[in-house]
Length: 150
Image 1 (spheres, rainbow, N blue to C red):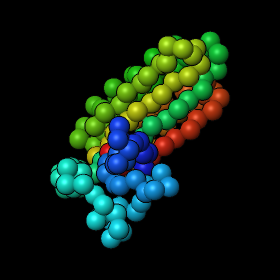
Image 2: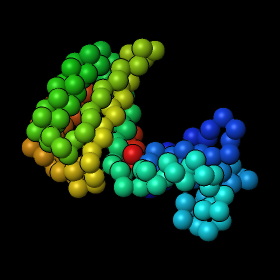
Image 3: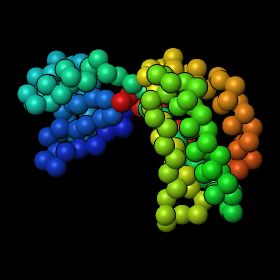
């Protein structure tokens, strides 16, 4: 699994969700633990890396395509599921956001954050997740999931 990566304005550093690493000359991020990469990390990035190294949570970003005409119903169910997850998984489910892009009538984006990988798996295996899945499965035409370090 590779983290999501974006480059800063001067393109000298790339910021991944949960990591900071130098950009190689080919425009790719390098292995954070390679000696070459560690030498190239700027001091500001090293401080940020030290602060974040013990805060690794797991994020889940899900892009969904919903059956035309069913997005509003899906969003209502997904937001209720998010609130239920936050309540039932307090301390493990850190956030659960549901986004409905204004320029699409069929797309939804879920952004979830869990304290660790075990918390994410507990969520996936929970009774309330099974209930939610049963309610919405027929509404979803496609799904792309990204597990991310936060």
